[in-house]
Image (cartoon, rainbow, N blue to C red; front, side, top):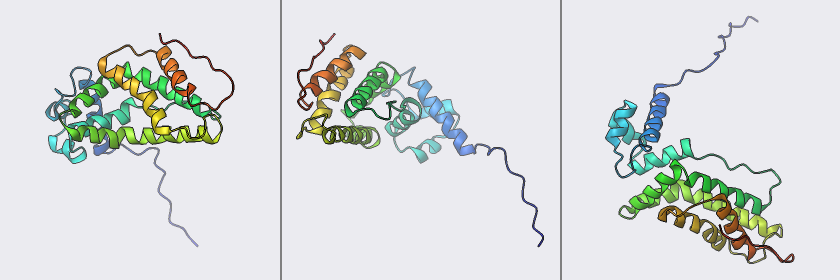
Length: 209
C-alpha cells in the first residue's frame, strides 16, 4: 500500500506575534520599574515602551498591579534550590535566604511599593495574596507539617504561627527599610524553630547581627 509522503519536520516553531508582544511588555515593565515607582508607573508608559496598544494590555491584565505581579512571576521569581533529601528546616531556611536576597533587589523595591499601594486600594493586596502569597504560604505550611511527621518539630506545632513568626519580620524590615542580611535570616530561623523543634537536647541560638 502506497503512503503519502510525510511533511518535513520543522526545526523550530516561530514565536507568534502575541508571544512577541507579551515578551516586550514584560521587558517594558521590568525596565520601567527600575526607573520609577509602582505608583508612578502607568499603562500608557508600558504600552509606549513595549510598542503595543493599551487595549492589548487590558486584554491580558485588567489592572496595573496584575501586570506588575505577572512580571514578578516571569522575570523576578526563581526557584529555591534545595537538596532532594533536605529536611523541612533546611527548606525553610533556604526560603528565608532566598527572600532576603530578593528583598535587597528590584523585587523588594516593588513589593514594598505594592504593599503601600494596597493601603488605599484593597484590590492590590487581594491580587498579591491570590497571585503570589497564598501558594507560597501553602507550600511552607506543607514544609512544617512534613517536619512534624518526620519528628523534626514537636507535635502540635502550629504551621501558621511558624510562618508568621519567620516571614513577618522579613516584611517588617522590608517596609521599614531596616537592614536585611543572611546572618539575620539564619538567626531568625534559629530563634523561631528553637521553640518548635522536637526535644533533642539543648540548642544554640545565634545572636542577631
